[in-house]
Length: 171
Image 1 (cartoon, rainbow, N blue to C red):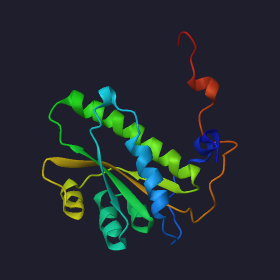
Image 2 (cartoon, rainbow, N blue to C red; image 1 turned 90 degrees about the horizontal axis):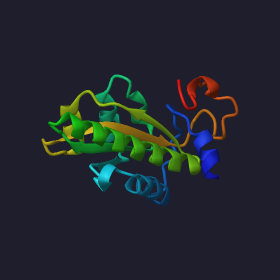
Image 3 (cartoon, helix red, strand yellow; image 1 turned 180 degrees about the vertical axis):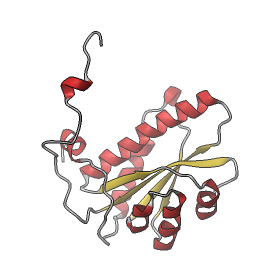
Image 4 (spheres, rainbow, N blue to C red; image 1 turned 45 degrees about the vertical axis):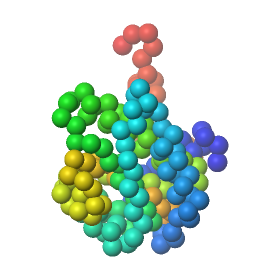
């Protein structure tokens, strides 16, 4: 798939087939996150990859809307320090957003669906992933082959009109 097609095809997938991801596919997705831009090249992230079904099921319980994680082929937990300073938290969140989208577009390029989840129960996330106390999971991205329909460019996305969103030179 071309980059523009991958961007247009990427959508949140919440139902996956039982087909696992290959090591090559997982490596490509993770490298995309590793290559993501970062403020001052800070790279505040660590990624914990989960493919074991029982661990995915447990991880799905860290957020009330995270049930889709249990049925994914893989999940990537985006881990950062538990920063005390608001500015550090904001910069890390922005950097993680860039890494998240980069992984999701790389997945779409391979025909792999993705979804995202927040994390409310940090204690459970730490236990399931074996994280040190000073670390938190900011987001979880799950990946798998879409069960409902293959990824393809969306012709008419459910978005606000571009002319309503884009302001040129002034509001």
